[in-house]
Length: 253
Image (cartoon, rainbow, N blue to C red; front, top):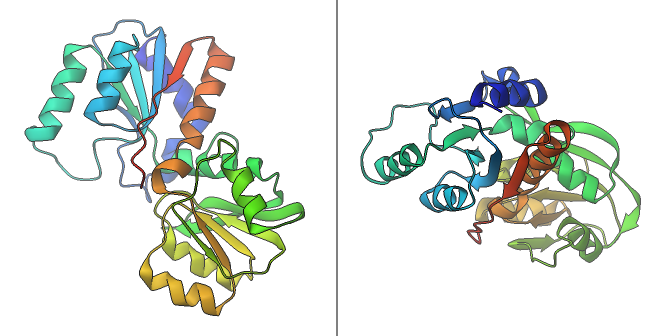
């Protein structure tokens, strides 16, 4: 597939135009290639020198990331930015970014994927940011302990970054917004949810969380945002037949 054909597929699935008003990311093709066909697409969380290098080593013609290189302002082509661009252009590697569209997608998004791991029912939009709902809330098929919820969210045995175990011992309702969405815990509190799942939590949320008797699982910004790229890779491979790989570069944050 050409980069233009891939762009059309990603646009048809992820609908980035719906997030233009809310998203500072330049969603879409951030670096093009010379028109060559792409036979393998690498997926990763971050556009960084390591993911570019590993995509090229794996024979990928495009790197699809959640966190791209451009965030609503001009960036000088110097230093780190120069090195990433230079290596991608030398290797004829296209770069595609999908930020909020990949958080909010109801099937292959970060938050939908986490909700699916919990088998949440009665899903509703949750976590409104700049007018766009990015996450989901729902009801567990049966009440679970906090440890059981954590184990289902991270079935590979990886541990969340932080857990604030202040909610009920038996959890029935959960809200999810991946990544850096600590403030959305206040929406979870207002809705009376038992548990809030996100990537990061900070000092200023600790006392409101404790006083309102809600549990928080902060799985790590990186760890909670590997879900969408993996699911999108699976769907692209399934629907187009193109080869896909996921490049894991965990930050521990």
